[in-house]
Length: 463
Picture 1 (tube, rainbow, N blue to C red):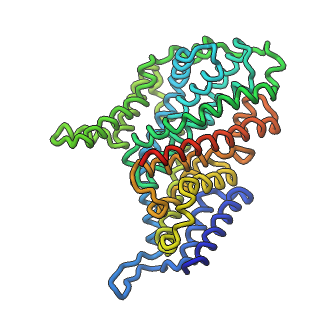
Picture 2 (cartoon, rainbow, N blue to C red; picture 1 turned 120 degrees about the horizontal axis):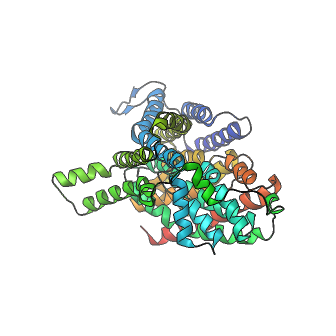
Picture 3 (cartoon, rainbow, N blue to C red; picture 1 turned 90 degrees about the vertical axis):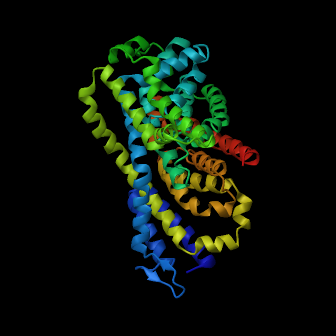
């Protein structure tokens, strides 16, 4: 099958996949894999390897699926595991709390909403937004009590910062997986830098919306400002002694420095053993391995090495579903690239080209709103968009990084009842579901629109 009928089948397949995930609660891995197989069969991909009359070899559907699945694991699996492991150790040692304290000291207590937002933004770079909110919520409550700032404003500010880093900045698994699928997995430093740059508009939008909605909505915990909440000192006491500032930030900053040195060596066209060593250490897998070693030293310093086995075990349980969903997204992308769809769209590219950077954003936003998971939206959209990058006119690493950011912007638009993060923010923020829609859902819409506006502007400047 080819032409418009194949495009129609593709659209129907995506809709069916969304319904399977959101309405019938079929696991994203099963849904994506099943749709990939059905789409491959309908698209006319042969069930076994074939050799055409001109000598061209065409892979069978089983091999296409295998290549898409294994390709993801071989290139990105270890990076996702190490990134998540660093985050887990930061939680256990109290380093995440130390990072939060450093942000508060930097911004000052007179700007509690901004402090909470930036704190969440920093902490969510290595830590999942859900767990990050749980970790930082006691500080939020303590600051609400001390500053008398709106509880809702503080909640929305914290949720904003956590969510922005979650969809934009590696080593969070979603952006890493999307970057790899889009072909820039070896240039994570560029993705990180672009993620920081593209955080400006949504951070501002989240801050102003938090201040605005804080005057309109009152949370349940504001009814009793005398509630017994833990002070910062009490939180520190639970960990014993927090790691030093350098020790806390080392697992994050060391990999960034190593990848930066590798990029510099490459641009300077350095040669010799030193250049090879720098390039080796700057490879994302090795850089994150070094970051993990820094985290393990931190764990040892906290006297918690006995927990390392359990921490690793629990981390593997957490990242397992992400790895499999990411691999399934790779399968779908491989099936799409093996069909005739890309060739047909290449011949009729004006419509998609006209949409430009909005195409990946809208597709990701549709997937996010429909099934709830930002990671699924990131990985699935990246798999769909990757074969279309040349058609859309995005070919340079910077342009592809902007596509990755557009997908990330869509992946937070919007968070509502089918998103676990919605319930974390609503419940820990002492709000009703109706208040959650006015705060978390509307805020993610505002931030998503602000993000894609910034990304669209950058796409006109950067090439």
